[in-house]
Image (cartoon, rainbow, N blue to C red; front, side, top):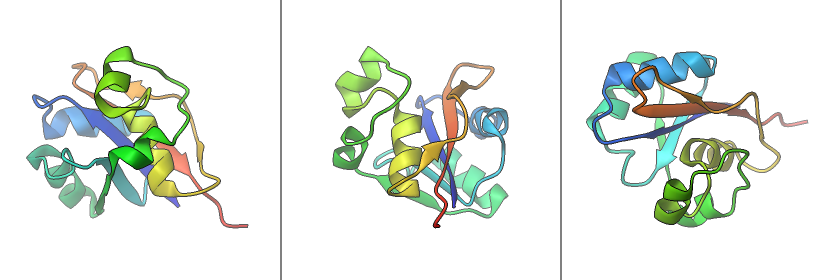
Length: 120
């Protein structure tokens, strides 16, 4: 399973999210973000365009994930160093790994990363 974790500011548009998603690799089975942002119109529209579901990840789950990136602002607000990384890893499940670094949309309003879990 491949999960695209998305972090974004309230001003992010569908184009912002799509750009970050594409820069991260553009192929996933599920989108994930923190609960509260999962209902944002932009992510809902992106999910509809891609034919994917959005998983809302609780703050407790986010805080349990070890991330490669670290933002002091994100850590203070969400309890993790990278919202996109933690959401992707948590939604993909135990044993998941990031396929690459977290990327930022061209307009700077969204971040994305892909995590993958292979059941062996």
